Amino acid sequence: MAEQADIDNLRVMLGEIIPDGGTEDDTLFTDAQISAWVDDSPDLERAAYDGWRAKAAQLADLVNVTDGAASREFAKAFDNARQMISIYQRSSSGSTEGRTRVGRIVRS
Amino acid sequence: MNHAELVMRRRNVRAFIKADPVEVVVTRPGAITTTGAGGTVRAPSTTLASQQARIVQIKRKFDNGLQNIEPGYIPSTEYGLVAEYTRDFQVDDTFEWLGTNWTITGVHPTRTESIFCSMDFLGPDNG
Image (cartoon, rainbow over all chains, first blue to last red; front, side, top):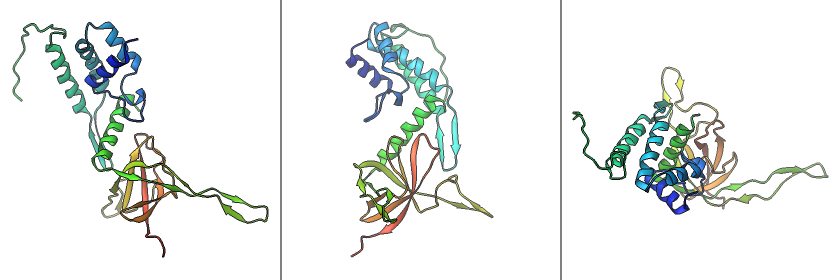
């Protein structure tokens, strides 16, 4: 099991902080899952890259919902997760290890 | 419900409440019991610790027939109380808000992401 401080830091990097009065069930990942990424990665940034990929996988199933008085655009959460994957992918700890990548320019 | 969706819904509720929170101190009436003489007495009421919630207006939309954009189960009142799913609110609880007394008249029974209550105006304390 990884150090609790590393688990807490990775939770911050993943946006999966346990809320006040809450438990790990109030987040997408258990401490055991977070610890596994910390243990299997050379540093926290690489662990965050792996964590965001897993988070994106969970968010990919969510859709926009409108019920009664409320609407929730959950699909946006997946797009945000993909952007976070890109951020950590480009770092020296990411999957590309900071090397030059070739990509397509897309007009918004 | 998908666990990821439930977590996201609860986070939305938490952020919604923190945008305009109120601290609610609830007084819960005691249980009514029968006495040996055949009458009833009410146990002393209890005061719960302060809980954070948000008070919102309950909106209704009128068409040819009456349409309620909030599905049934709770009385239609002017204000509603939204709290995190871990909080404790029951029908007949009373609390003070804006200097006057209010009571919980209904608690939505099927929500898992939050607690949503209807609340009715009781008025200021007598005398």
